[in-house]
Structure formats: structure tokens, C-alpha cells
Length: 312
Image: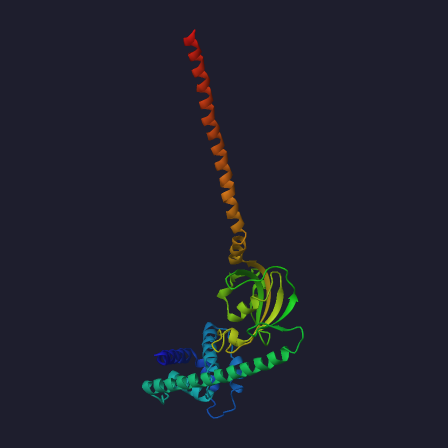
């Protein structure tokens, strides 16, 4: 289904080019010369683009040219141009039926897919070999350190703050690039540091952050096995890509450690609370005792007075 859809799109694109491509087809009447790909584009460039018909005809030719350039199996331009002429000129004989053309296009797509897989496999192996060679050479530098999982890093600026844990959240500035220097992300240029849980990023980042301190800046080399592996992140990050980062740890939101540190002094605080509660209890008991003794003394004195009065 995937191949059929692409094939139909290619057929319709060719038909559109043919309908508007009289001017493009005319210069390419040389049927035989195989080495004439360079001569044909030069002839195309000399075509006048003054009229609207010239411009959209040339634009359609450009579109078809881009599609052909992306095909990774051998093609013959003179045969392609002959087919366009056959479709445009009703006096010419079309050499293939629609069903035969569809079958040929599906075969082309299958070969393209096979070639792409072979090319990708070769590129992935090459990338793996290159990163292994680089890391082996890079570690010889005495200023380069290695994390427990194999991330190589060099300290650019020391930090004095706390070190994050996997359960923490951090704020960082970073620049990400491939081994050849191709930059694929840059928070510094955006002017927006990124905040995220340590557990939410690739394994190499997690490992790196746990050897950094707040305020520290490093340059790090993360092996593909600790990054995006064979899958990569097309089209920015190819398969088995070694990633090169500059990372500055701006802030650590150590929410979990904060709870742990307050829990330790909480034991004496709780012990102090019973004592504080006991003191008010004693204070309440004292006045109660005094109140009981006072009423007993006063009625005793009153009882004596009336007794003396009766004797008189």
C-alpha cells in the first residue's frame, strides 16, 4: 500500500510535468548521448522565463528534477525525457501500458527501499567505528573524566552547589552537536534554559548530571548507546551518533533531599513538644490546688464566729 501510494504520486507528478513541459521537452531531443546530463541542464537554464507559461513550466520541471535527484538507484535521463515526449505528443507511441508502468514503479520503489536500508546500515556502522576511535583517543587527555556509565566530560567551570539526584528537577543551558560539529539544538541561542526532571532525559544526560554540581559547566561526549542508539532522531540525529554537549547546570530543585534533611531534626522537635505540653498541665494543676485550699480555710473562720455568739 505504501509503495502503491508513492508510485501513483510519481505517475501523477510525471503527468503534470508532461502537460506543462513542452518547452522543457524541446531542448532534450537528443535521444542517444548518455553523457549529456550536463548539456541538458545548461540548455534548460537558457530558456526564457519571461512569460507565466515559461515560469510554471520551469517550476514543474524543477519539481520533477528534485524527485529524480532523491532516487538512490540508477536512472536514465534520456529515457525519462523520451517518456515525457511520448505522453505530451499524441503522434508518438507510448511504449508501456498503465499497468506495466505501475508494476515498474513498484519495482523501483522496492529497489529504493533495499538500497536505503543498505546505505543506512553502512552509515550506522561507520558512525559506530568513528565514535569508538574518537572516544579511545579523547580519553587520553588528562583533563577528560568518565562517568560510571561511560560519558566522557571535561569541566569548563566548577560548581559549588548541590549535586542532583534522579528524583530531582534541574534547570540547564546546553548546546547539542554531532561529532562533526553540526549543531542540532541550542538553548543559549533561544535564550531559554530548559527545566526537566533528571529521570526524563536520555541515560547519558542522567549519568552526567549526577556528577555535576549546581553552577558547573562541562563539555561532554555521550556515546550513542547512552543516547538514541541505532534509531537516531531523523533527520537531525543519525543512527549511532555520538553526541557532543556543552551543559551548564544552573539550578537544582532538590525537593526530595529537602524532605529528608528536615526529617532528621524532627525527632528532637517532637520530644520537645511533650515537655512543653507538660508544663502548661502543671501550671493548670497548681491554681486548682490553691483554689481548693482557700475555700476550706475561710468557712472554718466563719464557723467559729457564730459559735461564740451563742455563748453570749
